[in-house]
Length: 182
Image (cartoon, rainbow, N blue to C red):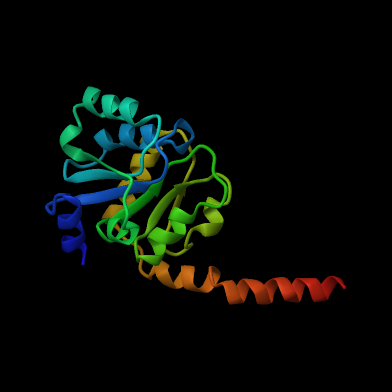
């Protein structure tokens, strides 16, 4: 339950929460997500799960934009499903990425996602419930986030993860490929 998860994490219940999980490093793009927040309605908050070398700089950015009451740094968490369950939307604003498991984890917890068009992020994103944005633009990020919060897609991203992320299905597909080329 979303309210129970928020209570356990010390997050407010009277707002919409966009979450981001991962190392707090420049290449992960969290600064762009913070810079997008002033373009979003006042009842939208950000929650960050994770830690890294950029935490102090990100906290200073939040303070300089007078957003401390809307941004929550949770640090490294032991129970990531609880974090995802507390969210209205997940965002991965990376500049560089491989195949990010956090996109799959959030969607497996039934949270739609907005991700940047880098690495294999689009392959991990449910095409019916997810949104892709180009990296680096706070305004474009804000537009995508607001649209997703205002008009949630129908469908459940968990189904996509179950179908595309099933190891048995992947093994069958690899076996079929191997037999095609032998």
